[in-house]
Image (cartoon, rainbow, N blue to C red; front, side, top):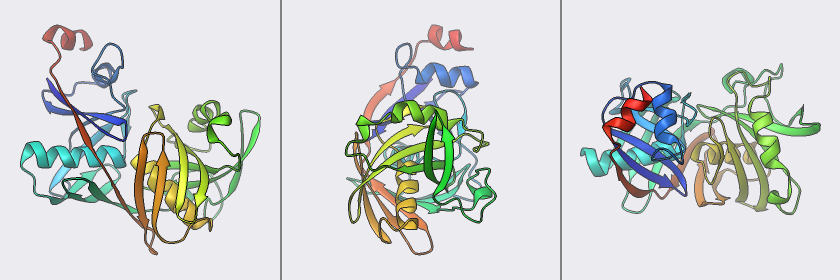
Length: 277
């Protein structure tokens, strides 16, 4: 087995370059922060589905994710740098096809269209659109907007001066598994910092707190436009790991761009691998 570790603003993924994936125990083992190479997920080749390349995305708990903006950008950079891919190509994911453009400094991906229709998120609500709905969790009343961008998101805009002064780390894991979300959900807590500038904290489904997330950035940007907090166009998303940029078009299509950095290669021992089987 040979793995490449890269990150997008601290949101790190392992790419399976050589070897077999194995089962969920293998995913959990390689993603473990103390006894494995460690990562917020594992990326490996998947079915092309009519695209130039295919990608499967696994959360660190072993579950499979439909889409990940940072994961896609990391895999796109890997394909160009290590597999001879051209700078522009299409990539098939469980959450649908995406277009990728790999430049020397940044990677841009077309993330598809945002949807607020409950069945497309999915979220169990009997409303035309899951915009500014109410939910009770952890003894609190929350107002949220549910967004589907190939995977589910629960976006909560907050009025507090400091997000880290709230109990978002307590609320995130409870909302992730709330019965309203049949496939669980990613959770974002958001402050508006300017006309086209947002600050977010992220609780990622199957991974927990993450320093950055591409699909979360897309969902937050779309929710901000939908609720009138931002205008269509490019929006800056500020996270603990840094900034990503999302362009929201009037047809709700989303374009995500930002940097990717390579950490290095890992080749676990045969004994270690055998212990995971």
